[in-house]
Amino acid sequence: MNEWLYVGLFFIVGLLIPVGAIGVAAILGPKKPNSIKQSTYECGIETVGDSWVQFKAQYYIFALVFLVFDVETVFLFPWAVKLAGLGVFAVMEGIVFILILIAGLVYTWRKGMLEWA
Amino acid sequence: MNFWNDPLKIAADWLMGIFTSWGMPEIGAQALIAFLGIFLLIAILMVLDIFLVWIERKVVARFQDRIGPNRLGPYGLMQPFADIVKLLIKEDTTPAGADKVVYNIAPMLSMMSVLILWAIVPLAPVILGVDLNVGILFLIAAGSIGTLSIIMAGWSSNNKFAMVGAFRQVAVMISFEVPMLAMLLIPTVLSGSMGMNAIIQKQDIWFVALAPLGALIFLIAAIAELGRAPFDMAEGESELVSGYNIEYSGMKFGMFYAGELLHAFTFGGFWSILFFGGYRFFGLEKVSPFLAIAVILFKAMIGYWIIMWVKYTMLRIRIDHMLAFNWKFLTPLSFVLLMMTALLNALLRGGSTWLYISGMFLSNVLLAWSALEIARTYSRREREKAEGPKQALGVVAEVHH
Image (cartoon, rainbow over the protein chains, first blue to last red):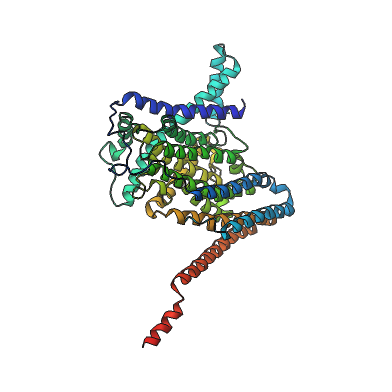
């Protein structure tokens, strides 16, 4: 049997178990909604301002840097798998690749893009 | 080949015989047997999850110099069952204005992302879900569903604390995935394969002896991925009032909580597979698969113990310190370690084993020491820039006398 079919079955059963648990809870639990219970929680006081606060732009920068390094490691996986049979030259090639991307990280750092504020 | 050597195959053949004698086509019988196997594994995991709750509560109590639950059942063993009954009969409140579909799906996805990781965990040489040859990529990909579920929970709750908590949590999780990926490349380099079973088979010498710094960085990055202290910025009870799961109650909260504990145990398992030899223990796994299962569960429990130990000992780190630590210290260090490991592996592999082990181990120690020295110098320079150099104080004091 195809192994990815097994993984697909695992996804389905893995989804069914929490759905079942939450479904049982939905059946067994009382249902008495009132406006106080359903009001938004803010440490016991009335909410101040909008719930959907502005998305801080710095998160986007971190996501971009993450994306660059994520794609880099995706390219590094085939290199790592085949490294044993390829000799020192292939290792040096991989090291040059990683160094180019480290240079990108240093550039981001020096430009102040990794600061939180 | 008897039951003690190869239980899964014996059971599968027996069931296949029964199903085909009922007239089921072979593909259907295979799918049904796979379905039953998956169901059994997940049921066992959920029971394990219950006992992880008990272990967690007892351990945190001992760390805090108290006893923990001891009323229900001997040593409080029935406590998690009582917790489950409580969570099941709680009311399912949905906050007003919440996005209902996303709000309900988030806890299900969170638990699902942990359960599917067990498809690739090899419990014994012959007992495993599926031996994917891209196991490590599957680990990362399935883990990212958990990240997605957190942002779904925070966004749909119609609560600014939940949203800010979710944003910060996801920022931490994706940031720490970079050193984790680099550290996942180290067992790949050392064993020449991405499949979990192959990595274990190649660990005649445990990889922690060849890359101890790699095991340490993987542990740190995994703890951050799990969203556990000291990286649980989003759940900080004092800062963000429970972060992305503020508005959740009942079984949905239970799914988040139990999912987090099971995730921690799963990562203890992966840490032991990737660096500590998995189910191998000086040939014990060849005696019987059940001993191999016992070995890997024991190692996973030790990994889980270390993760709990870190959680209940260390203070929570501030979000900007967390991200600075990752991008300015861990990421460069992990990539330098990767380059060094690949180079030394290629150079020293063919030579004598003792030179290989000691060379790689000492290079790790050297790299860790020099990284700490660089960090210390950098922080001393930052501190002196802020306060002024120490000699100036001595001169000023003299002048005043």
